[in-house]
Length: 165
Image (cartoon, rainbow, N blue to C red; front, side, top):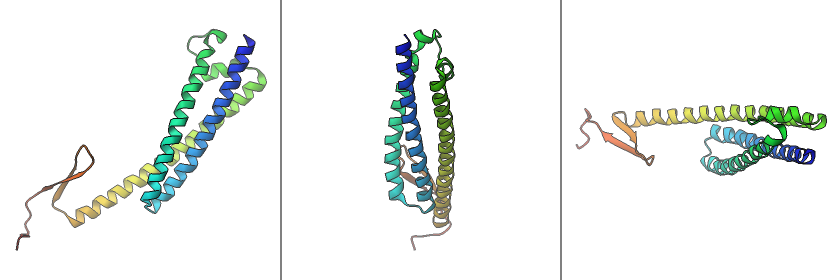
């Protein structure tokens, strides 16, 4: 049983290391995204979105793997609803330190990722509002609605200016 336990712990450590490296990579990509948003580089934003999607899928697979490894420890630990803190508590001193360090690092890197994500959202929202104001200046009396496909559908409202002359 100890061999299975130690094997699971080592697999969890490897999984956490991989998750941490993926999150660090996502943080770097997100910082590049912020810079691309600042200069309105659409092509770079498209390229970044593709990389982010790939990394996000890899991260989701690693999280699924980690959860499966933790579930394997249910009969070993003897608790039905196991959390990562239970695994850390049940592990040996050396592994406990590794798991705690990895968990703390993951939390910190995830917070960095959230911060850059929030900044990207704000910059994107600001850009959209700027474009909307410019469109309102160009065509002030036209309602703009977005269809389900994302295309702009413009509804004509009667205008005081006769444009047919």
